[in-house]
Amino acid sequence: ANSAAEPRRFGQQHRPQTRRGCLQRLVGAMTVESRRSSAPFCTQVHAIVRKNLTVTMRNKRGLAREVLTPLLFLGILIGMKQALPSTEQPRTNARTGISISGLDLAIASTRRNELFVASSAECGAGCDAAAVRLADLLSAQVTGSPSNVTWLPSEAEALDRIKAAPSNALGAIILDSAGGHLFNPGALKYRIRMDGDAFAPGATAAFARSYGTFDPQSTQSLLLVVSDMQMAVVSAWQRAANVSGVLPSHVYASRLPKAAFFPDNAATAMSSVIPIYMVLIFSMQLRVMLQNVLEEKEKKILEAMRMAGLTDAANWVGWIATSAIKNVILIAIVVAAAKLGSIYPRSDWSVLLVLFGTFACTAVAFTAALSTLFSQARVGGAVGMLGYIVASTPSYGLQAPGVSPAAKLAGSLLAPTGFSMANNIVTVAEGSGEGVNWNNIGDPSLSPVGVSVGSLIGMLVLDTILYVALAWYLGKVVPNEYGTTLPPHFLCTARYWRGPPPPGSASIS
View 1 (cartoon, rainbow, N blue to C red):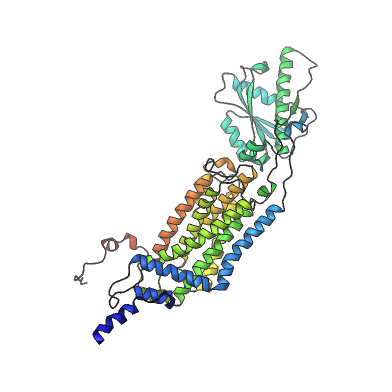
View 2: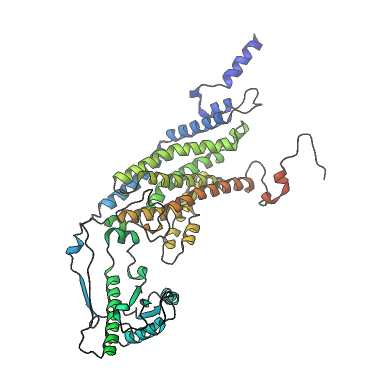
């Protein structure tokens, strides 16, 4: 009777009811006979997910903080967006044009007093002499002209001089064809090159493509150069033809016809605010997950489950699955709020899903890496969240003029930095009236950032892979309370790659 009853009690012990608790179910499912064989991998993952979700639902305060904090940030963004209304701009052909005369025009800025003259490589013979002559004529202008006009032998050198001193250079006149001299205005072809970032820092390619609006300072400075150029050519023709009394040139500029539109002033004004709020929304999920992982580590719960047969791979897959369930709900809420709350009304919702989803993956991988460095839940959660927020601040410096696209992509190895720049691009694209979609996701000219949203999403995928590799490496080398660690250079040793010795063998040293 005893031998017949024992297997029934053993079977009941290792197949407990659900209400007995997730941890007991996990321990019971891990063995078949006296815990000599581990439970299937999927069973372990399922038990970990159920445990995590049960703990989350029972922690009412933590659940409220985890849900209400992102909603609070979204509400702030929506309120700020609604508080900045957009006023209708009239038809551009109804606006008054700009009329400027070279005789009475003062220079737009006294600091910008250098103008360069050069000939292009495609210009024919005699262009260098014509460029020198043009520089002399421009220098002879009495009013409304720069104080320093310099002839340079090539267009490249002129551009280098502008880049070297953008605050002093007004621009460069490049001769493409002069007919060997300046005495035939009909044969003259030239280009004016100016520093667009210095004169119109708020005018982007997408903004110009949609609205055709530029900073008034850039228009005034451009007309100054055009007026002086025409006066110099007329002066040369007068002297060659021995003609007097010809009036100086008069330049008139008017915008191209354009229908009325509503510029998104709120999106332009919030281009530096929205990215940091988006990082804050997802950083709360990082803190909650990191604190829960470290709490199991601090209370020895993880070690008890390992003794019962839980593998590290099953444990982390369970945590990833738990985080995926939460993040899917969070991302759906964020995208819906961004579309319906007019944060990103013009952008494709599927592009936003991919952007937010890849960033959520980097947060999970970053959590796995940080969990190897801390043993206390409260300290680790606070430091991890603060570090993730601080890691987004380099994005503001990388968006400054003069930073190369390669440097911006390298800075995106910090996932919050790349995510902030991507949100900045989306915000600027919203202000231009286009938004981000699958047709322009690879266009780097959507904003002054100079890189595309697609390239930044690719960097977030790379960040996820790198953070996972870093978590695996730190788990091998960082000392823990239990188990042994490998030396930091273990990947360079032949012993690691040979693997453990076969059973029954021994080495004598």
